[in-house]
Amino acid sequence: MTKNNLHLLPSISLIVAMLLWASSFVALKLAFQGYHPMQVIFGRMMIASLCFVIFIPTFRKINWRRQDYKYFLFMGICEPCLYFLFEAKALELTSASQAGMITAMLPLLVAILAWSWLKESINRKTLAGFSLAIIGACWLSLASETSINAPNPLLGNFYEFLAMVCAAGYTVSLKHLTNNYPPLFLTAFQAFIGSLFFFPFLLLPDVGFTIVWETIPALAVIYLGTFITLGAYGCYNYSVSRIPANRAAGYVNLIPVFGVILGMLILGDKLNVSQWLACGLVFCGVWLSSRKSTEVSHQ
Image (cartoon, rainbow, N blue to C red; front, side):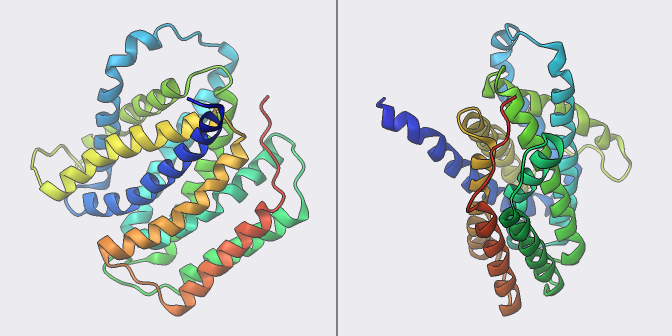
């Protein structure tokens, strides 16, 4: 493989990851049509964990550093634990297209978190862009119309925003950990932690275990466990290990584009004129803030 190809590989991996993540909003909507959200989340985590079983002998050679435990704990709490709780609730209440739009704010949240946690400088353009994106997201939510795919879009979009806050925390902690641990191991760690965290939810009376096979929802769960939890996270974690976290987070801006297109093609989602204008405001905010972005510290 040539040097240019090696240079392009992280970017290609990120594009693939964003396309897969955009499709996950549609897949979750389909899965929720047949199963309880907690059954879906546990199912995808468990399927991904099973895919990593063959790598366990290799993982035993990992040299754990005690000072990294807090980063592993923080990363696991942020994503998959809290992230998937918020996202599952979000997609019960809002459309896949709108949820995808809210993800456009992730790069800004990463910059804000890096400023507050890692004490990095943040410029006025980033702050202005963040403000515009927040206004756009609020406008998108307030202009939403209740539908079958979005019974409570205002609350659903808020939950998706909380999921993005968790994703920002995950990105920053992941960047620190990739300095000492391989991306494949970090992806597996997420899957195993997610399986353990979401298993107790199956013991709740209103959730429970199920053995009923419903073709489309079941295939959606399998897709989420393999192509998303394994594939998308694997590609993203690999790329973050090769390039700055802020630059990697910037590719998240592709998710709204992919998400809106897939939501319309597969689920029949629709946005009104006011919502399209709100989407434009979100993109303007993201563009303004990314004109001169700060990088997350490697320390």
